[in-house]
Amino acid sequence: MKHFFRQYNKKLILWMFFELAYALAMVYWSYFMKDMSDTALGGEGMKGLGSFALFGIGFLAFDLAAEYGRLIGRARFLQAANYGLKNQIFDRIIDYDIHAFGAKNSAGYISLLNNDLPLIDRKVFRILPDIWAQMILAVTAIITMLLFHPVLAVMVVILNVLQLIPPKLFGDRASREQEKYMASLDSMNVKIKDIFSGFEVVKSFGIEDKVGADYFKIAECVEGNAFRMRKEQGRSMAVSRALAYLASVLRMVFSVYLIMQGEISMGILLGVMQISNYVSMPMQSIGELYLEYKTVKPVIARVMATLDGKTEHELSDASEMDLKPVVSAVPIVVEGLSFGYEEGKEVLHNISFRFEKGKKYAVIGNSGSGKSTLIRLLMGYYDFYQGEIHYGDCDQKEADRKSLYQQMSMIHQKVILFEDTLRNNITMYGDYPDTAVWKAIEEAGLTTVVDRMGGGLDSLVEEDGKNLSGGERQCIAIARAFIRQAEVLMMDEGTSSLDSRTAGQVDSLLLKKEGLTLITITHKMNLDLLKQYDEILIMEQGRIWECGHFDQISSQQRKRLEWIS
Image 1 (cartoon, rainbow, N blue to C red):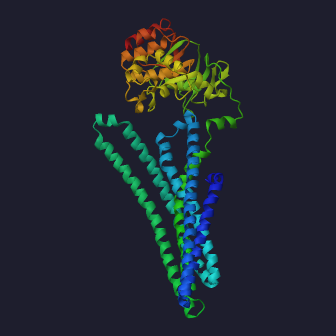
Image 2: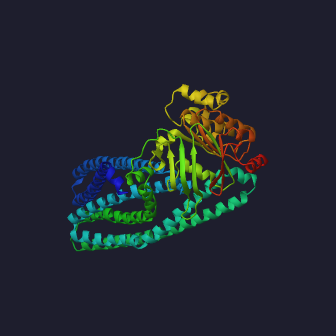
Image 3: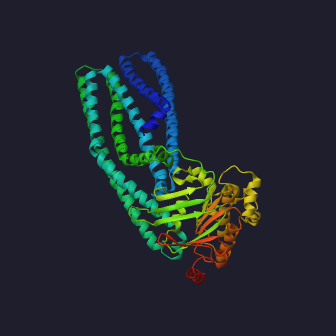
C-alpha cells in the first residue's frame, strides 16, 4: 500500500498541510480562551471585548479555510488512491491467463472488488492519514502546552500515552478475527452466486427450504465472526476510553493544585484545559484508528497478493522469451502431446495430429475422454504440457496470445452476451465498418433477427441475451468469429443446449464456410452432418483412438455412431 501513498504524495501533502492549518486553528482557539478569561478577570471592560470580537472573527475565517481545505484535500487524495488501486487490481486480474484465473472461484474476485477494496479505502487510505493528522494535532498541542506550563504538559503527555497500550495488546486478536470474518464473507459470496446462478433449478426442484437453510447457516457464521471481531475491537476501545477519562481527572486535579499554589492563572487553566483536549482526543483516536488498521492486515495481504502476482505477460518476460506474432494459425500440428491438471495424473497421453487449413473436424468421445482438454490446449489456455503444439511455423510457447486469438475463435456451450448494442456484442468493441458487421450478420444467419429487433446494429441486447433464443445467441458467437476473419473456429459442445433442428442449422452454417478450419466437439450424432466433416477424431481415455472420414473409420465405430444417432 505504500506505493499508493508515494504515487499520490502531492495530494497527500496538501491534505496534511491543511491538517496542520487546522491544528494551528485549535491553538489559536486555546489562546483566545486564555486571553478572554484573563481580560474578563482583569476588568478591561468594553475595550477588551471589542478586540476579542475581532479576534473571534479572525478565528472563524481561519478555521473555515482550514476545515474546508482539509476536507477537500482528503477527498482528492481518496479519489486518486481508490481509483488507482481499483485500476491496478482490475488490470492484474484481466491480465491473468485463463488457467490462473480459473484457479480461483469467480466469487473470490467479486469479493475482492466489492468487499476488500472498500475496506482498504476505509481502513488504510483514510485511517493512516487520519493517524498522521491526529499526530500533527497532538504535537502542535503539546508544543503549545509547553509554552503554557512545561510540567503540566509533560504530565498530560505521559497520561495520554497510556491510551496507546490497549490497541497493541488486543490488535493481533482483532486481526485474526477480521481474517476469519473476511473468509466467511468469501464463502457467503460463493453461496449467493451459486443460488442466484441456479435460480431456475432451485425453483424447478422445489429446494427453496434447503437452499434457504444453507444460506441462513453461512449468514449466521458471517455475523458470528463479525460479532467476535467487534467484541475484540470494543474491548480495546473501552479500556482506552477509561484511560482517557482517568487522564482527564488527573489533569484537572493537578491543574487545580497549580492554581491553588499560584503557579498558573485562571486564563492559563482554561487555555490548558482547552488545548489538552487536543492531546487526549487525538491520542484516543490514534489508539482506536491503529486497532482498526491492525484488523485490516489480512485484507491488505490478500490485495497485495493480487497486485504482486505474476501476470501472463510478466511470466513471459521473466523467462526472457521474445513472443512471436502468429501470422497464420494453420496448420495446427500436435506432436507427442501429454497433459495433466495435476502432477502424476495425465489426462492426455502422447497425442499427435495435424489439423489442415480449411478442413472440418469433429471430435467425438465419452465424457472424460479428454476432448475439451485437447481443445483448451489448442486454444493456448495452458502451457504446462509435454510435447509440442505449432501454429504454422510458430511454437505455442513462443506465440503472442493476442495475435493468436486474432486468428482463432472459440464458441462455448454458454455464449456470454453483454447488456449492450448488437453491434458491440458482435464486434466485441472492435473498430469495424458497418459493411463488415452486416456481412458477418448475413453469413451467420442473423439478418431476420436484426429485422425483428427493430433497431438495426444499435438494437439492445438485454442482460445475458434474455431477449434472444439459444440459437440466436450461438449465431452471434459465430458472427464474432466471422467478423474477425478467424482462420480457426473451435466449438466445445457449442450446440448441445439447442434443439436438434437449430443445432443442425448452426452446424450446417459452419460446415459451408469456405476456408474456415473447424474443430468441434459434439455429442449429437447426426449422421448426415458427420459425413460432411473431413475427419472424425474418436477419443478414448486421453488418446485419439481412430481418425478419418466417416467412410474410412472402422465398421465397428460406424455402427456405434449409427446406433447412437
